[in-house]
Image (cartoon, rainbow, N blue to C red; front, side):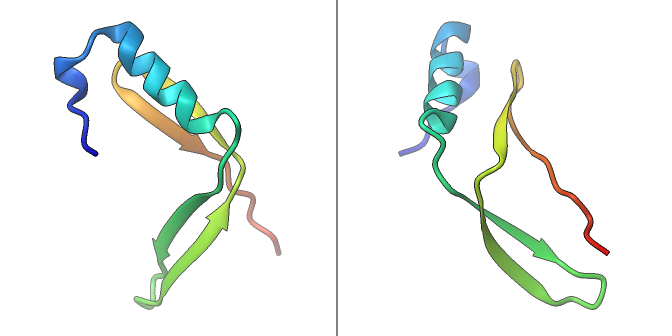
Length: 64
């Protein structure tokens, strides 16, 4: 299913975003390293960052 946020009321965009993170599902996050190596990992630490524009946010810690 696809949604066009510009065609929805702000309260409807908010409901879609909050529904995406409560209860907290697992997000699949993909990255590409500097060497071009692909990675896909499950990630559960994310939240709504903004409803206008609609954005989800993840927080990543660099482990050394």
